[in-house]
Image 1 (cartoon, rainbow, N blue to C red):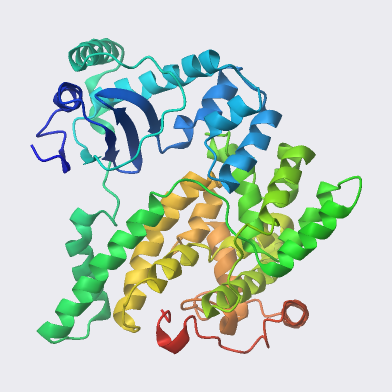
Image 2 (spheres, rainbow, N blue to C red):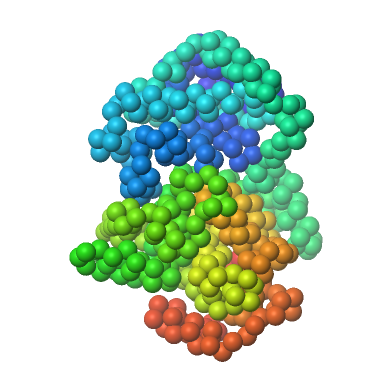
Length: 478
């Protein structure tokens, strides 16, 4: 078997994979994927030294909160540092003296064993082994069992599980592959060609296909990237620094700053929902996020986001300017129209402010590649926007109505999606992508235009009616 390889668990069983890694004293990282559920196993000389998962319930912070090891307030502070630095959460806990090495190792081992043994129930999954990944073990977890012993324990646990859960329930579980999985790229590419509907010559089709494959890999990397905070705009950073200089620190001052920066708003919601696995109870406004986080965690977060060494949104890039115009305009309109759709004004404003954020990932992928602007690329963006919205909304811990807005294809019947569609139609020159002015009443209101114009002037975003390209020389135009 090659040092670097990938395959399917249907062909090469998980127990065999464990034994092969141990017997050959392998090091590196194995990632096992089933739909949006990914399990990561780090190895060092044939021993498992760390196991993690991609879903919210797999997070170490959630496990520590549920086990009573650390209070929520402390975990929010630590996660604010974890999401804005390269520091591992385990290292932050140890360096802060919140737990001993032996104590934390036992807690991490408990979580690791649970995530590991669940893999024995996976009958269909894809795995990839990267021997070049540099593993840096921090904790002493007791997973240095022989592969045969792990397989035996996993089989026994699986047998016990089947006794308590009927096979019908198991058969009903669905674990579809993500649309930007490389194996599905060819089918997706043909779907894009069908959407465009314009014939292309073979040479042009080959170039577009190669660009689409590169785009697919880029989107997949973004979707699988670790959870992290987003850079904010430069003027946001300046306002946050002013808040930090005031004593005592008043977290309520963050509300008005976040109202003009979708990235700061998203960062606050991500952190506030990081310890929750029930998205129906997730917070969806900045005031609620501040209430859940507490002043110390908010201070730590904005201190890091406004630090000189923390990245900023590149305002010289047209894409960043276009996204802010679209976000602020939709936020103002959504806030004013919200009650007509049975939604609170603050939540409506936030829905509008965040509605276009999936484009950030997609434009970032495009910036690093050559993908000709035109109908084909625009369709590729929209196809992956819908899939990426579902994945991102889950990893960010956003409420379900935000997922509906982020991935709306114009047909979602929810009040949140209908609200943002109406808001975008009210100011079509600011919108990213197409609008449907005939399908929904735009609820035109001159007050909305005046308020947006005032904010655009303050933020130096140009006139409301200005149509700004999303990339230089057409590179990032959808």
